[in-house]
Length: 408
Image (cartoon, rainbow, N blue to C red; front, side, top):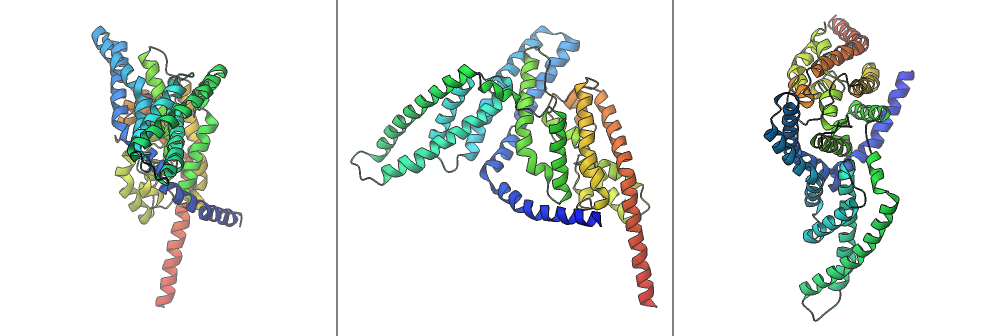
């Protein structure tokens, strides 16, 4: 009875959240962030390769020229990474704006805010805020001032008048913004952006919990949360590489590959554990699902299990999937925090297990952590999976008896 009430509540939540997610997916900023992070993959892998060579050289090779080259190249990219992110995102969102005006605004606002106390840990937040402010500036000009000019019959050439008005408008706006930035500098307000971090066990639990909850009600939890989570995770990644460049110890643990190859190891919800249990199942249907999901397990693809078992709206698997997975994520975070395994400082993409965790950490102990977490996940899922398997088997027997009675 209690389970039925709980599932009715989840169904109501599903009906409420589906329109919200549908609108979110159509939002131009949401889609632009997704595309931006995808386009940055190659650049982040290049940065990671340089950082990895620098770390390996510092630990074992000790070649001075190699250290100098990697340090200078890595420093050059990390110094301008936030700027590249902002321009790329501006290009993706600048569909309804005059692009030169938006790019100009972005550049000026970014340098103003960055000069008010920006650091490696505030690069991406400052870039994003700069783009938001610049979008507002461009929107006001285009929707208010430019429309006003178009409604007037003026003797001057329209293009020349437009440029003149843009110049006067930007001088006034940036003059006022400069005054605001000076006030922010006196209170070090911009530096507080460094506290926008995901490196807290409660935050990690909530992120993974909501991801699993969305998967449980039939939506791609990773796809919905990715633009928000990756924004901070990539900011942490950049700050870590700046620390490596400067010879400091990286401070952040929550990077993109922590989410991809540890929290979502073998698939969202640690579904590799269910692949193992499915292969050992006595039920033929469940075993076939497990066989179909084996290859995807090594590429962290969870859909064959989530929709094949299914996990979606399955009351037997709610506790291990939605509650247990976040707890194991927090456990992994503490392992990295204690220094038992090197954190995933480097970025790799589209690589299978066990190669991805090793290259993300350059630590053989990461493979031990992967094995331990997979074992813990299998033990965690076992009693719930067996209860579900028993229920499926009972339904098969009932259907068989029903067919016998019908034949009789």
